[in-house]
Image 1 (cartoon, rainbow, N blue to C red):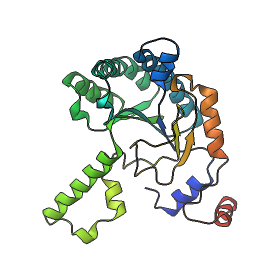
Image 2: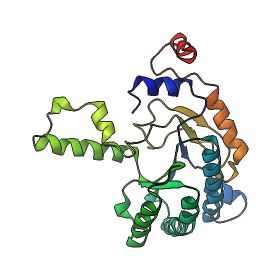
Image 3: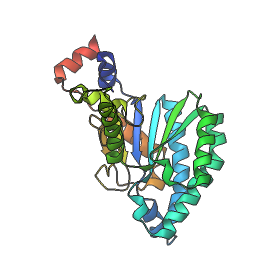
Image 4: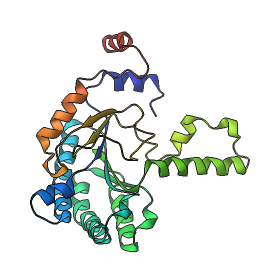
Length: 255
């Protein structure tokens, strides 16, 4: 949450986002354009993830959240879902040591209970290995949906009301926020979606309330360092107000 005035001032005046959230769209289309199976695009997209992580570390960005698999993606063809699960497991097995070496903390965000036991065990190992790393927090949203996130937060509060710990009148937006995924992290300053679509697709719908939105036609496997730099440059050129006037923000900058 950005309730603290100092956090609002920092977010309004900083040219570098603390937290970048990305929908990595266009893998399948990238592959189809090249006459390749869709999963080849997902494999190519892993290289882009590596590049984005490296750039975030170099720029001093604290958190990056990548939308890898939504709660709606189970509706895709069974063969593609199976291949995506295999790729997810393979990435967890192969990439975690590299992340750990580079002091990146990995978190998997979403309802992981839907994954098979192998994936769940690998998630636990990866998170345990990297939990003390400090250079960057990498959130992978897997079987995640913004509506699910809000629902599970509200259920937690409803149980407290039922047990008499809370009264209904005690429930505030802050309490809802505190029970969402990633509640201990700054909310996204910059949201990026590749692939040409201009919607948030049930991704962090509560947390994106004050995020700057950036859409690009570039397909995810082609979203190289230069494309990322362009998104960061766009962010740096915007004035974030958080309900203040432009004049107030200018005074904050000069204070």
